[in-house]
Amino acid sequence: MVLNSFHLIAEHAPSPGEAIRATRDRIVAAKGNPLVGAEATEKIAGASLYARYALAGSFCCAFTHAVLTPVDVVKTRIQLEPTRYSSSLFRSARQIASHEGLGAFSTGLGPTVVGYGLQGACKFGGYEFFKARAVEHLGYENAVHNRSAVYLASAATAEFFGDIALCPFESVRIRLVSQPTYADGFANALIKLGREEGLAGLYSGLGPILLKQIPYTMATFLVYEKAIQTAYTYVDKAKISTAGATGINLAAGLVAGVAAAVVSQPADTILSKVNKDKGLAGESVTRRLVRIATGLGWRGAFTGMQARLVMVGGMTAVQFGIYGDTKKLFGAVDGVELR
Image (cartoon, rainbow, N blue to C red; front, side, top):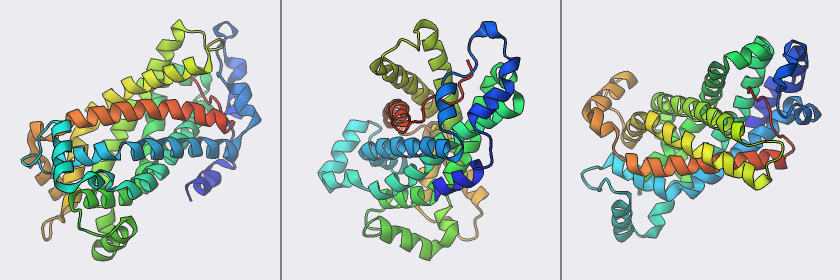
């Protein structure tokens, strides 16, 4: 479904290569840096190119979130029940294991894989798509001069569509983690939540997800792009080995992940609270969010920060490492690079 959406959006849109050719004559030759990877992206263009970006993004996000499901379980428990669980990640993990067994750490794996697979396709595929459209609209030189704005706008737009796809599955995941007896498995939980609470229940966390994920993704891509740009001022990209390029992607992703974790932590805590229980009778979504945020306070909003730094920092590093290698495997190498 996600790939079909990219096909419908992209089939009539110019490829990055076409956007480059339209602006190449205006680039000062002395800069010697139009679009890194332009030759490769010209070979595969349009919907096929963006589908490959989407597939690579889907794989890296589904894989990393699946691997870190145990950490996410502990983080969510700390956020939802801070009086029961210690703020320490390891002490809380031991407590969960002793009371519920090791199986508790795989709670929510199904909705995590499906939800973040869809979200990753939209996020990475969409980011490449909207960044290319910005170059087409602004021209390469203007896009370079305003690259931070291009990164932020492209990331925010892509993440918006990703969150629409993610939200129902994240609601189910949090319900399963916070209420282990809620339903027997992912499919049953999704059906039960949809039947009892409808779309309002499935999308009850959309506001907090948007507030969390959009700043997170904006910070992630901006810091990552800046870190990559800095790294390649000291390293010749044309001569670096595959292992070296992967290492740079991992390091830049780690820096980006730590920054993004701090930016998005308050909304992540509110999201966990929103999805734990139903709202009060007659309570609007806005009132519910205000009530929860007021009850948490500034300190409470950063509950579980230690666990989230470990999770998000490591996850983002691995995501960019996998994404860089996977898109090359699919034949979609570098897209628009504003250097």
